[in-house]
Image 1 (spheres, rainbow, N blue to C red):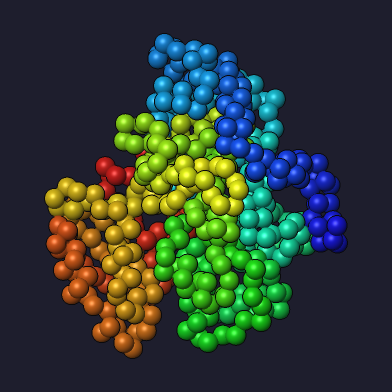
Image 2: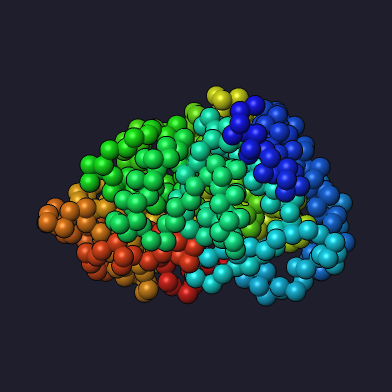
Length: 451
C-alpha cells in the first residue's frame, strides 16, 4: 500500500466511516451477473417497502389508497404499481415524509438548487451517503483512479465542501489528496491562478462541472497556455456534456473524458467506463428506472429517469421524478460489467422550449445548430413566452463577431415556429444556478417549471 493510499484510508478510519468497507465490497460486486445485481436490489427493495409502510405516513396512506400491501412489491417491475413521485408532491406532504423513527437514524441534510432557483431540501441517511461516496470512488476507478491519487475538483456547492473551519478543510484536502477550485467566479484572473496552481501541483485527475472544465479548456487554448501535466483522465459531472465540450476538453488536456451522472436526493449514479459506450448504472444504492409518458418501465429507449432509494431510511423516495431525461440500453458492455447502460443523457425536462405551434423542442436541438456556427464560445437559450426565445451568445472573438451567422440561426428557428431575439453578451451575463451550474436552456414558462 502506498503512503498516499494509507493516508486516504486513515482519513475515513479516523472518522469511523464505513466508506472504505463499502468501496471494497463494491469493487467486487461490479462484476456480478445482471441477474445477481437485480436480485440484490430486489432483496433490499423488499426491506425498504416494508420500512416505509410501517414508518412513513405518506406511504402508509398511499398504499391504502391504492389497496395494495408491501407483499405486492417484490420485484423492480412491481414499482410500476406505484405512481411517480414529484417534488411538488413531496413539498405538499412534507410532514408525512418524516419517518416515525427518525430520531434513531443518523442522517445529514442536503438541498438541490433546482432549475427554478427554489431549493429542494432533503435528508440523507449516513449509510446512504457513505454508499454514494464509495460508488464515486469505484466509478473513478473505471478510468484508473486509485485511492489517494491527486484530484483537482472544479465546481460549486455540490462538489466543493463548505467546511466551517479552514484547518479542518486543509486536513481533509491533505489526507484525501484533493484540491478544490470554485466555479462561482471563473474570471480570467482566477482561471490563470487555478491553472498556475495545477501546473505546480500536477493533479493526476480533474473532476468538475462540464461547463467549468470546458471554460478552462477554452481559456488555455485561446491564451496558448502550456500545461506542465497531462491528467490520466477527466471526470465531468452535474451538467450535460455535449460533443463539442468533450472534443475541446480532450484536445486541450490531451486525455480522455469520463462522464458521470448522479443525484444525492435520489441516490442514483452512473459512470462511464474505458469503452465509452454509455454510463454504467449503479445498483448498490438505488434503483434507476427510465419510463415512458405513462410511467411504464423501458429497457431500451428514451424516457424520464426515476429514482428509488434503497438505503435512505431518513427520507425514502420511491419512483422519484429526477426531472432528467435519459436513454437506457440493456446491451452488455465489452468491459465485462453487466449493469444496464445510460447511453445518453438528453438533459433536464426543463431543457425544452415550446414553439408557437405548441411543439416541445429539446435543448439538444440548439447544440446541433451551434456546432455549425463559427465563433461561439457559449450560448444560453431563455424562454419566457410560448413561441419566443432569447439567445445570449458569448463570442470566441469579439473582433470577428461577423463570423456568427445570426441570419442562419434565426431562419432555422423561425422554421421551427419561434420568434427569435439574439444578443451578444459577456460570460458574466449568463445565468447560473444557485449551485454554480451553467444551464444552456432556461425555460421560465410556469407550465413547464420543475414539478
